[in-house]
Image (cartoon, rainbow, N blue to C red; front, side, top):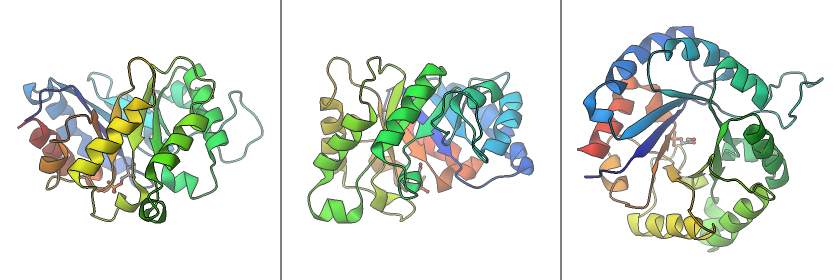
Length: 246
Ligand code: 13P
């Protein structure tokens, strides 16, 4: 049982349509109930749904975020992209930066650093994803990879109060496998130890579901979860939150 203030962030990835908006009614109702008085729900749908979600969430406390953005702070000739300012303008308060699915598509730590800086300048809160691959884990490089991702990703960013770290081991995403509790505790502690003063909130992501949440919530230094697949189903998402507090 946890009594901590926790964040539950739904990353819908490239899923969802206008009709998915109806599935939010249940979650909105739940967000207003006493069962969630110690936590915050945040949805990161595809860009195409940000404005509609923003209208839908008008009278509730559910947060809204984008899943990425272009690194340019100003508008420009970048076909197919949107920047942090546009996300903010569409109603988002958060943005996910550095997700491993985008790192796998060529985003490097320097680019991620630029995106984080511009997102902060655009007054968005950043969910900064870090994590090692399976081969890096096998080579016992987890700590050095995380350290490098944090160092370059947050280079020259003085005020880190609007940054959340999402530790997402690449090998745990979409695989049904989660880290051992002891390893996870140690890694989250390591991440927090990289910061002087008050450490940022550190969330865990990778195959979080209603069955394994019982184990994950026992990892006492975690401040919330970044949830992919299970978050697309309102019942499962609610179940995860309920089980965290039960
Ligand atoms: P899954 O929960 O589907 O493993 O995805 C995790 C993730 O990538 C969240 O950003």
